[in-house]
Image (cartoon, rainbow, N blue to C red; front, side):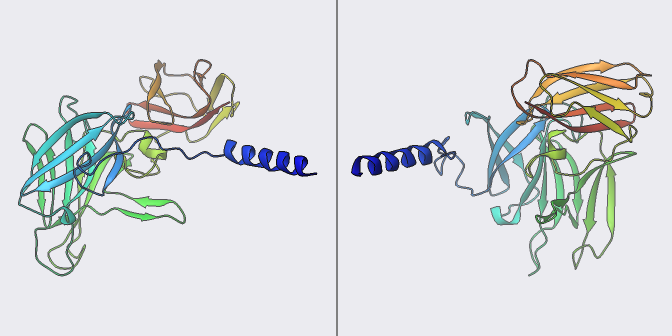
Length: 293
């Protein structure tokens, strides 16, 4: 009887230990992350996710980046409008092409947040790592609001049928009391941010231009999947891109105009969730998810 009890307890302990899914992946020291509690993932581009932390010293913003293996990539320094404290500065976008379409430089959008107690400097800046100030809007706030219960997020940069827009709320007294300014941006938002976690370039439900109805079959798939549309592909055709769950680009190819279906080959990819994106002359045409078993 005692032997059976010991055997049963051992089996239970083994079963519980085999179900443990939480393991330590890496540890950072306070100096590694610049002593800042804000540590998150952003997308510099469609296939370039990075971990980011930052610190402000006087009017110099230092952004430290790590790759997905937690290896330090580099530190970037940006000169701010005025000296501020860490608590009075919000980094909302870190990107290669969203603001100037030049992949050779990294840009950051910083917002000096609204201070309900008064004082401080209110405004929005877009700064490039080579020292260029791409945008400075005094008395502006780049508002970002999250609603976790229904997963709705409002962000300053949005995809629209007429291109990517930056929305800034103007405020000389109360927040948003002086209206909204809208700016055209030359770049696009990383596709991983459409469905990914907050902390990328943005999180939003994209406005899709065309391809109003699409059937993806089979989904889940074990290899190939077909995307069928209710209207032919327009213009000069589309560019198909497929991204893995970590935001990495796993497939890219051109799709000619006039086609009503697209084949996606995931046969060489591991199991997981993939995001496809089709873009054309007018921007984003269709995007969605495919599950590979």
